[in-house]
Amino acid sequence: MKRFLDLADFSREQILDLLALAQSLQDKPQPHALAGKILGLVFFNPSLRTLASFQAGMARLGGDSFVITPGQGTWQLETRLNAVMNGAAAEHIREGIPVLASYCDALGVRAFADGRNLENDLDETLFRMIDGLCGDKPLINMESAMNHPCQALADWRTMDELQLPQRAKFVLSWVYHPKALPLAVPAATLHMAAMRGMEVVVARPEGFALPPQIMDKARLAAAAAGGSIAETSDRAAALAGASVLYAKEWGSTTHYGDVEADSRLRADLSDWCVRERWFTAANPDLKFMHCMPVRRNVAVADEVLDGPRAVVKREAFNRMAVQMAVLHRMLA
Image (cartoon, rainbow, N blue to C red; front, side, top):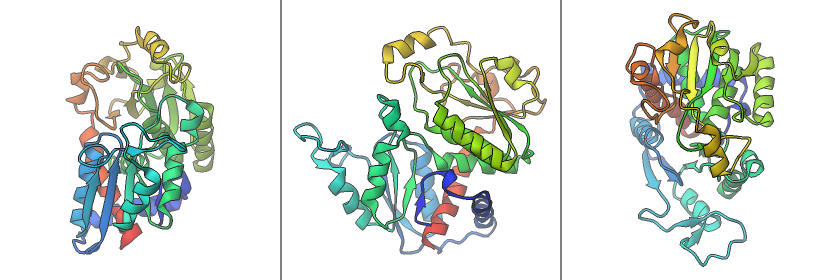
């Protein structure tokens, strides 16, 4: 494995093989499997679980890692092509990324969406440039403009652990946040649930529909796995009979890149905060999922996060479990 950028790059059988390897490494640890190997981690954007879980996973396999956060103890890195570098950035990624890749056996990069031009972000302009700069060095997507495969794989494992049926109803719901957040997690989550073969419903207010490219990709995955995709602004109808509610905040696609218009659109949507009353018509043992970080009593109420439905901490643990499988497959 030279690249882990998108679950869509793998067959369903290959994903199941990775999940089986994650379980095997948990049951029978291999503390020397990656002895002498080095993982480089580059974070253009903040992290808690991704940073800690990759470092911990690499250490548990006997390897080492280094972390670069451009501009924090290192030079600021320029990402724009043909930039006149007379500002804060002292070095361009065209030099920085190949140099860092030369120091390690695999490189993980986190680079969020620019959030200004939807077409550029859908095209993964920045991450494709980084991919090209890595050459033959293995590369891991630790969240890009439109994807977060590590989170998606961890969520798949979490649902398997919970013994949720392949055809269970899975609701991906938009929830409130004071700011527009990227589309990477909802896009990756939607595709993952579709690839697993679930009955997927996207619940979102008007103006927050996911782009057609993301929906079409999920529909193809669902068709191949025997699942289905639907979307609605009717929250109650979406949750009827649901076994999973996956909550996530994201920005308006109608006003992508327009902060003021997005803010006006979400101003009256604070009731899209998950509360126990949402689940009246759901499956009684519905599970609540979120990638975190999550704003309590803004996106999700205390009663849900502290209640028996929430499996968010298990999702977070599984980040390390599945990433260890990816690292093992790449480097062992």
